[in-house]
Amino acid sequence: MSFHDCALADDGKHELVEISQLVHALDERFPIGGIQSSEAANRAIEESSKAQERLQNWYVVAEHHCYNTFFVNDCLKEIKVERRQYLPVLQRISLEGKTLLRQIKVMERDRETAQKQSK
Image (cartoon, rainbow, N blue to C red):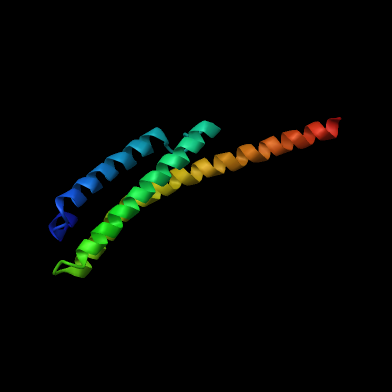
């Protein structure tokens, strides 16, 4: 049984296709090691958070729909697999952005400390 056999409403299928395209676009715009500035990091965090929220909203609606199908467990398993396909990419982008922002903050503090000590 595939997700599309799960009889999810067409709008749910369409939403998943849009989420898939969004995740792939974000993965291309923010490849591993590709976030190099605080502006890019903030943008990556914001966009990945919005996409994660959208994915979670899709999942909640799809999960609710599964309880109205005959093969509830198969349907639930399938939507979990779908979600797991996209969530790691979004989490990676967010984590990389947050890591870079922390590193920048540490470097700024170190620079300020060095300036204070040199006076």
